[in-house]
Length: 197
Image (cartoon, rainbow, N blue to C red; front, side, top):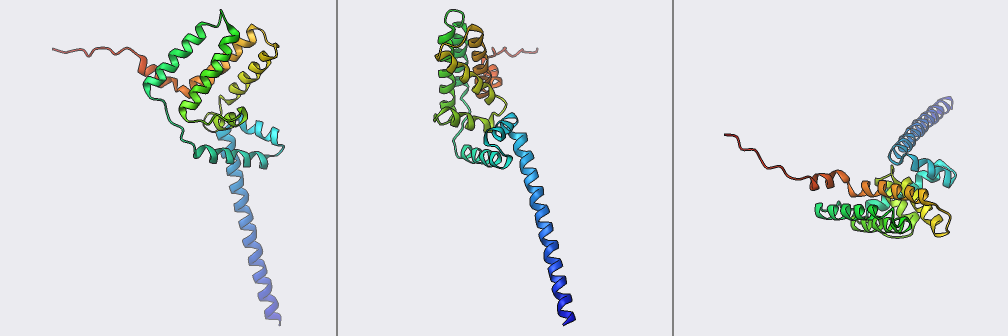
């Protein structure tokens, strides 16, 4: 009977040790997941924690965003399309002095058109912002700020400086989505090759 108690204690100890190892591994995995999400989403991670009230809920939401965007067909622009969008922005921006309110509306429309062309769905604003945050977390706060100013403008609560800030915020997202480096390469004049004799 004493042998049976010893075997039972050994088995129980092995089970407890195995559970502790599994728990430690799970906690380590959770920590790495949290770090990965925090690194990927940047300030959007903190915003989600604040909005949802806990890290676990925020991380669950951010993982759902990743899964949803993974199933979208987000595509880069063709160089000619990127040039067209870039030219449209320059025209829009050039009209700011004469029509700041109209330019904010046009900037919002141009950003939406660009998002649609890239493959982002055009659901409600929060859904769009959430989708953008997966691949462009550094500028989604600009999009939120621009939309907030545009909403205040519709209520007549803005001045020209606010409208300028909205355009700057829209531009930050626009540049990121446009992949400005590619546009600059596509629009640089080609130099003729020098012939060496």
